[in-house]
Length: 214
Image 1 (cartoon, helix red, strand yellow):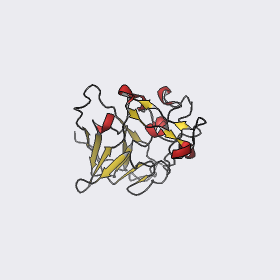
Image 2 (tube, rainbow, N blue to C red; image 1 turned 60 degrees about the vertical axis):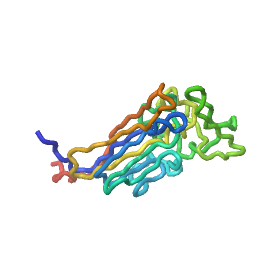
Image 3 (cartoon, helix red, strand yellow; image 1 turned 90 degrees about the horizontal axis):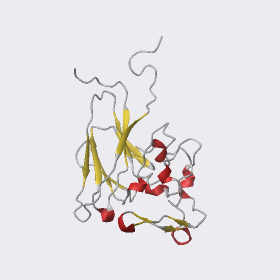
Image 4 (cartoon, rainbow, N blue to C red; image 1 turned 180 degrees about the vertical axis):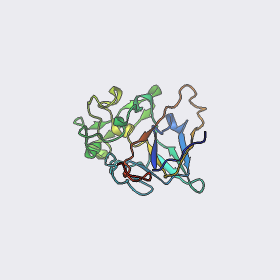
């Protein structure tokens, strides 16, 4: 049987878009025939309505490069290094979950005055922020919450949260394709990349599909 078109639009999100040490093995994902895209801090048309789990102050500049390689297609390329201990596993690792933390927490300096540490193979991924000289923007740490993956608790949110994008496909879509690529890694062939994807809930009007419930 042939695919059936959906009567409402829907979102498909891709997470953990980053690079290996020194920018090797850069990940990218391309989607075509999309109506919109969004991420923390905005998107093609800004943060969509009813998406209150996104934070306007979490910017993707320096984390994601978003281009239009051809008409109707959007290409998202990771720019920032990442390691296995940064990897998200659930939506709660990426978004502002109700009651867990606020968007403002992303920019709160930890009590030590230092955010971050050297990590990755040979501790060669260095992203350490000293609030006294670098400011507190992006210095916030994940809370010690049971809803956050254990390996992320107490670590900088910036290592994980900005590295995702959601593509919105329009009503009438019956299928879609995402093209995922990993760049060259000749200088570091001993490790790979991780990513995951998910749908997002859509609240549709009762009559969106042609009739209202009796």
